[in-house]
Image (tube, rainbow, N blue to C red; front, side, top):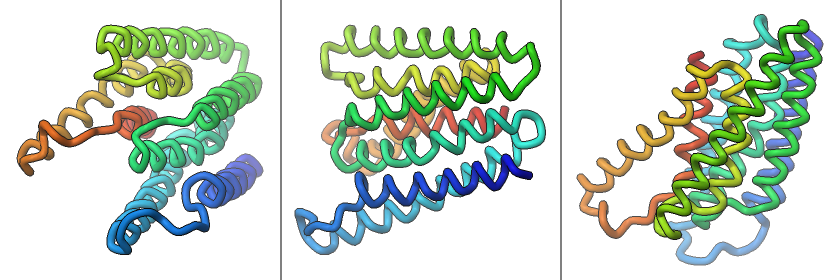
Length: 218
């Protein structure tokens, strides 16, 4: 029960702080009022999605691994902030990706200490998952020559790979390739709307969405 209150309080505090400082600054937004309204509606929708994800994480992991559930709740506000910034600016800022790495590392370390001795196996798997997913996205960025994955995606990948790897390799694979499934489905939607060739599509939200879906359904 104590883990539940601590995790919920940290999630709400982090979400409010990040939404205030990094996502919804109190300044006039460029563009029309209609564009501002659309952005505000999107932010509200994603905030609700984050709360639903938090509920799914608690429901899935709280009894089995409360330390890991707390780690996920700690990193979730940063993932929400990264999603919103990538949608608005088509970039993943270093301050947020670095913070995500630090929070994920600390959270998984606490999760490992909260488990039995077998948790060290999970920690090693998390390190391997972080390294493999980071190298995978680095290879995609280098092969794309700047036209595919960006360095922000590369910097986000280790955090997601660590979380997925902590659970298991099947979950790692589901989360890693789920991002491309979601991105491909959205690409089809854009093509049906006649925007397939001209639209710029940030990939960070699909990386995060695929990872969260895999973690909730593991």
